[in-house]
Image (cartoon, rainbow, N blue to C red; front, top):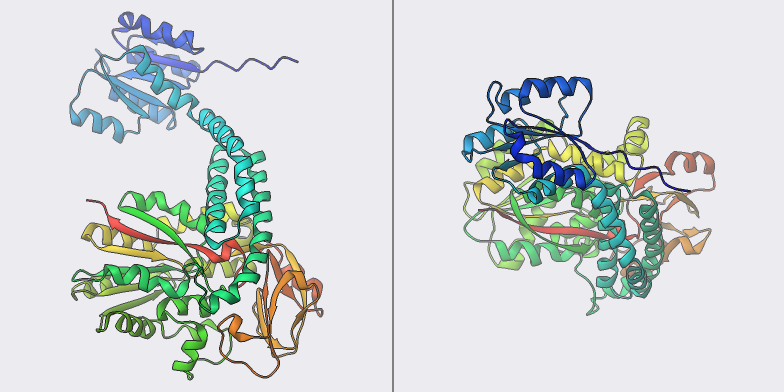
Length: 524
């Protein structure tokens, strides 16, 4: 069966010297485009009223209406009409005015037929060309990527494969390749299973300082912040609960202002704020914090009580690492309504030589938690892609972005990271526990804990496997694998219905554990 012919793309070329452009017109027509040529703006507007055009090539300097005047009328009739301005003028103000009126491109005469074709192809065919290229590139990479995923046996190898899969998710979604995107998502599911087996085997060794452990939460200040301390202030920014794919969606916005050097670290377990973020600010594991400050640690998983001392922990860590008192200004921002006051306090703190401006932004974490309780948020952020889009929409208008742009303008370096990511949980895992068990859905501490299906969780009775403070006699620790979330036998159906398809954290998955850390250097 023959495929129907692709409809010809329609181009309108408006130029008072149109007779001199016949070679260009023929060149475009030979490449399958329908081209109408007209010598003045009024006739062009009349033609456009009769039938739509996919692209208009518009001369700026014509008798009667100038090209920019014609463009203004076009924009009122169709704000989305694609236009390329063609002119003899190389003056900056002409180009600036055309770009300000949202032309798709700008050509200066004389132009060759090949130059015109290049611009036309990019505008009219660019999307389909990128889609085809993405599909071809993924097909060529698929076998090798599958092998790398199945053979991964170190923390670095898992991180490299996971990072590439995230990039393919973003690229293929942008290209509209839904079928191939399903293939990538299936590869992520397989990698997640292998990753869980790997972490269960290796994590207790990491906690005993094995030589091949990856960079963990406790290493960030030492490895990234301390080397950048000097007489100039430096920012240390933590976006709570940010996945790698959310970060990658934000980087184009930041790339306009910063040179970005990105790597990753592994969040400690549980991948939850009371543990991972305290480890970042203190440079210590939970058992070390509890020994040094027993009055802070109440063995709960309540963020409010366990994350109330991050400024003190950071100041102590910096003094331990540098041998001197480093001035620290600390901000924890829950709402962008605080923005103006936050910016004022930061500007004041920047006057202190060598200050560290430490900032924690909680919006992504609040949104992730709130999604489980809000039908509206659940609908808006129904999957990973939608959560990325919502995060990007917030970031573009956020105090965080305002602060970072100001840092770039003032020439200050930034270390930006997160404490952990989150995972879209689909499968319940029944656990049996006493009433004293902690409430988190991805990890449980309590006496005589056990999972009905042992393969759904990392289980241990040795707190040293997790570097947690010593618990009561008979204390057990469960951390969920893959995309499982814990439910009790009582109210089983209620909790399954309530929390299935929720973004949760605290467990073992690449999405929660392999998270970005970036050094941002202002451009210019």
